[in-house]
Amino acid sequence: MDIRGYFTSLDIGWTNATIAVVVAVLSFVLIHGAVMLFRRRLDQLSGARAQRPIVDVLAHTLARTSSLAVLATSLLIGASVLDLPPPWNQRISHLWFITLGAQLALWLHRAIGVTARRYFRVHGKNQENEQVTVAHTLMIWALQWSVWTVFLLAMLSNLGINVTTFVASLGIGGIAVALAVQNVLGDLFASLSIAIDKPFEVGDSISVPEFSGTIEHVGLKTTRIRALSGEQIVIANAELLRKTVHNFKRMNTRRVQFNLRINPATPPELAAKLPPQLSAIIDAKEKVKLDHVNLTLLDQNFIEYDIVYNLSEADYGLFLKTQQQVLLEAMALCRDLGISTAPRAQQLVLSKAAGPEQAANDSPAVKRPDGRGQAQARPIH
Image (cartoon, rainbow, N blue to C red; front, side, top):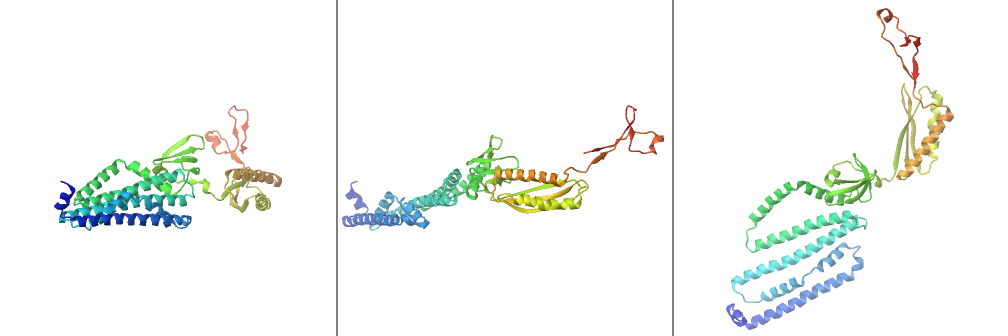
């Protein structure tokens, strides 16, 4: 059948067909021109993209406008002026839904990618690290596939296909798959949680109950940590998040607390001299703020002082250097004051099983095993 016979079978006259073609061409020119004009206007505002996120998102989104979708839309506008029989009117409405739905899905696809990338750039301190890549991959993949799945189901429903059974089957299949790979999915969502919440980042020094080390890589399923002893530890993301993580890199200051014990026989006047002089020693150190030096415990075995000070920097090397100086000068101070740090002397009494005639005469002295004399009780330090 030639074109003329085809138009005759549809009751379309040449005048009507010519008008439809002219309308389609004008529609294409107008739509394409409007899109280009709008994109050019957004490009002129490129300097304000950093302050106006919506401008940046719109510019990248419109760049995804499909020329094929513009052409199809123009043809559908031209076809709308044709006098078509009833079956074709319904088919044209289906084509309208498919064309506009596909273009909308393309725009959402691009908008999701641009928005997520911008979000991680802002919250990641302008650093495209490995965690940003992991989170970007997971989130973009999930949201974009959700967009296309909704579009596919809506298109099938518009074509008259019952998608209820299909959706139910997808739900049952999804539950089965989720149960089969629940450990893998748990690690994937844990990776996304690490990337968004950022309890730690690559390069941070952390400590968990089992080990300490530096984060080297955060993957989709596992995190690799370089232990202090040198070996690499690979641990699942979900298991790592279940532990209590101490992140030392995010320490702004460091609080130092230790105890000093002296002999309980120390005179009170001498024991009272220790706190002020020890406070002066700590105050003289750089980047140190004294909290307190107080006598906190008097026991039959020792006298205990509680000493606390704060370092203005969390550097571990500074902590070791300062603590060593404080301890050495505290030792010298105790020596100069004549204060002993030895605990109270303990006495151990050794006795030998005695007969009935010796049981009544209890004495701290016992005979030596060789019978050459008596062993006296000796203090044990």
